[in-house]
Length: 201
Image (tube, rainbow, N blue to C red; front, side, top):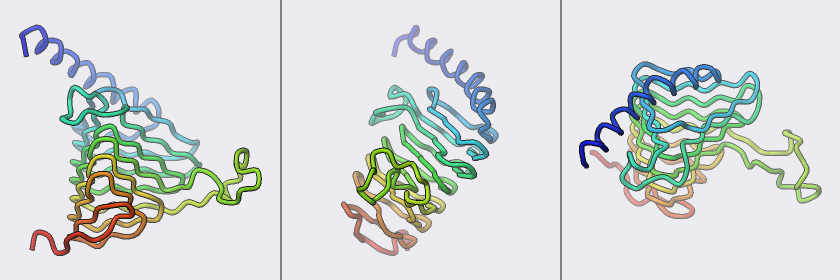
């Protein structure tokens, strides 16, 4: 990298550090100490909902700052009143999408690989009658997601509603997680299945 590029990226990082936390706080996001942003994430919040970023959280929305690149900026979106997204201290997300109609909790020291999607809702009703225009929340299923501490979720994975992933787990790339994952295990596939248990022991 030549000198001009190094200066450009240094100035860009300073700009992001100065402006993005202010812009997120203006939207109502709680931003922890030392949070780091590579590019502006996409944030939208339903009335009376909550998004909290812990200390030293890293959100990477710019492909120049992550090995695989990202398909889009980080998306954090609450869809209903009282919905909540919490991202624990020292966790990092590259170009992921987190959409909460009820609650999504991401623990401490989690690694969320490029372009992962985490959603606690079906977004649309299962009943086919008038599905296209049915916005009745009571007919659109949603269940909270809890991703515990020290989880690594591989690129392109999809975490669906109601899932609880135990601490220290690894989710293989491009997996679709539809059921709970016990702690200290590796799951992969679509749907995700046990590959190895008791990792780290």
